[in-house]
Length: 114
Figure (cartoon, rainbow, N blue to C red):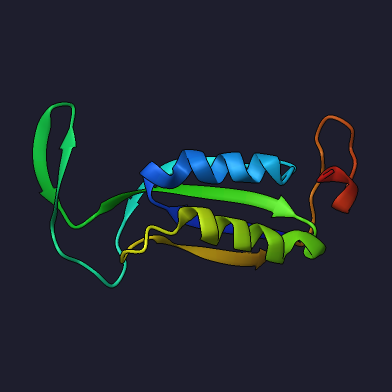
């Protein structure tokens, strides 16, 4: 089992989620985040009608726990649908998932993901 963690641009979020739903991903957790990579130039952002400069870019964080046989397919979908063709399109990380328990049923391991 693996956890796929991806950071993507907010304007690409809906199309990535739709593609993952069509691929029947068992679940997805998301967060609005801010961060920077190698490009640390200031950017202008607008929040609540106020314009400000920041090095932290708005991004979306997505996490999905999947079985080992689905990792490559899910990574390919995220990479395809999140690609802006520009710097700062995002990153995909794959982490080992040691265990999982479905709280409601007590199921453990891969059966808890399905």
